[in-house]
Image (tube, rainbow, N blue to C red):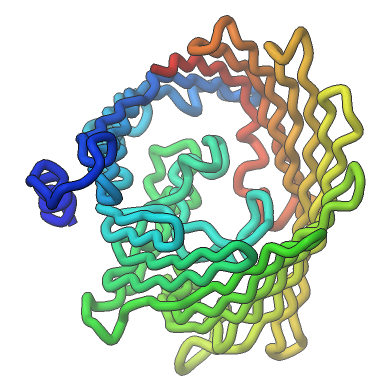
Length: 388
């Protein structure tokens, strides 16, 4: 993958046939940020949950329509020592013009209209090393592959191919405050051409409505536990999403059918497989005066045994004050099936355009379900970020 980026960089530097002066010049863009994040548990034993600092650098090199993008972190993590060091995030070469956008290399691919929920957006896996106590964009794990997109005025067609898949990173080290305990993982699928992921998405941008249709032949990126062993299996996703603005509101919907999805459980024989139906309904309200309110509900139905129904909702409310220098937000995940909740409160104050100070509180409450393992992980946190 790094060789692809190097070739693209060299290609940008090579002389090309005659072109307009402004088009033939080499463009280099550099930006990034420095941030530090620290969190203290509010329940006994009142220990540090997170303590990490990083430098993020992003470099774009472009000549004519050809370029390369590299994004990397230099991290010091005082709690999780093995997370310290150099971390390459995205590194891809690209070609882009008025209609075509081609990217080859390590990249983050997002689909769908859901906010921080995964229905059709299942290409890039997630880093759950510190669960959801990170910016959602930082949780995404890049995939190495090819993305080809053709755009028209009212529609676009996207195709992807990923030769070697990436998978969820789970906190299994018991020294990690976010650990879910040891999990015996079956070996990941072999790096063979027949194990590649591939799919496509057709999107339409019409007057008063945007919608997409998608299909993906992939793997369950989060291991399914069967008889205590984490398993990876093939599955196919067929999806659709829609977004409709109506005055101060935006109505969103998303649906995904996972064909032949591996299911957790116990028993003899092979991991059980069944189709599952995933549906999301959402509404965003922009009433003015820098208020934003958003609510989502996602339901999953699995046609297996006695049938399984699970529901997960989110609610977001935000307000900007003092000429948009202070942003207050509350974003909650609600486990409708089991009654648990995870709510992140934050106050982001911009000292200037480059320097932000953010304080927050993460609240967990659950007696069972997906948040139960973190019921004692409520925490106060502080983050300082300088962008350049």
